[in-house]
Length: 113
Length: 110
Image 1 (cartoon, rainbow over the protein chains, first blue to last red):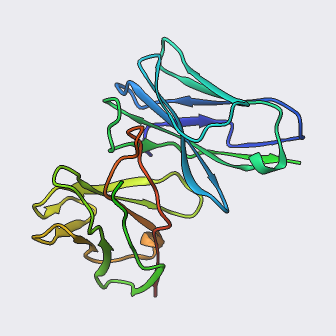
Image 2: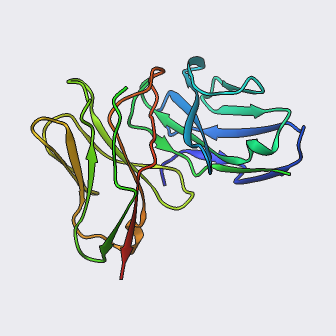
């Protein structure tokens, strides 16, 4: 158990819909990272927050957005969903910003029908 | 960004040592080598990292060559639960993030 929690575990929705994925980092970690893992793309970095502020952006689509709240939990919002958005979404956390020792949650499996 | 090269897959007998190689010939002097693994569809798990000295923790040992162009992750007594994809990462992305390649799929067999 990494100490990072993610909800929900599974999410099935339809194209065009909007969903919110939630992540709670390990106790004491200020940085949260979001990754997407699809079959054809592997693990791709999406976005990072540190203590409530966006710190880095990767290959995140404009239809996707995220935020980190004062209690340090983070939410990833995916809108206008397409079939290709079906993937595993992982959240990771670390103490410092940009640290490469990251602790990953169990992921949310999103299926878009 | 430095790139890593790993074999696509490897087999190991249960109870034997698993030695997973990684080439990172373009690594720069201040870049660490990190290893993660991902057991089927679970979140990646940090294993170990090092700069130039060999490192050991409760999970594995990391041997880095003197020229730092390659490294080997050693699982001393592999178990069936070590079956996973192992990722060697030698740099951060331009945004300071982990860059995962395709990794090595390790199958530990009874």
